[in-house]
Length: 125
Image (cartoon, rainbow, N blue to C red; front, top):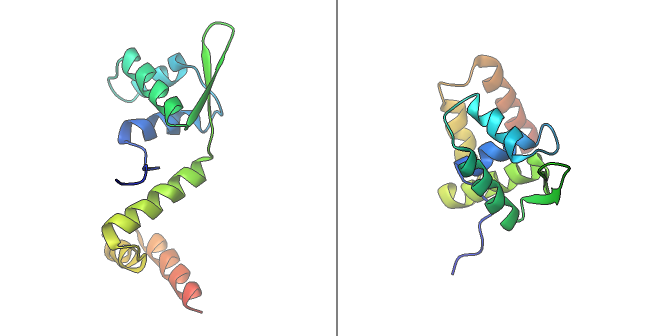
């Protein structure tokens, strides 16, 4: 049996991205934020936030009128874990093929490509 994945689903990550910048939120606040970008049901947001609590990514406490959800892990730690798992699954644990792919990616502008190349060179030294 595989170990439990730290990787968030696309929906879970969207919810966490709505909460991380403000530090804590109610279901209504997250729903309003997500709804400003796409169609989503309030009950879906509520269910997903309850799942995130069950998975240990959110802590819930009672508020005056609604429960307040707070992230239990910093965004950087979650992203780092997700990238590590991705590199492990896709590139057999080696980051270099991912970096080469990024360098060849047409979506990078010259400044981003140059910064990535500098990072690679500094790691080789």
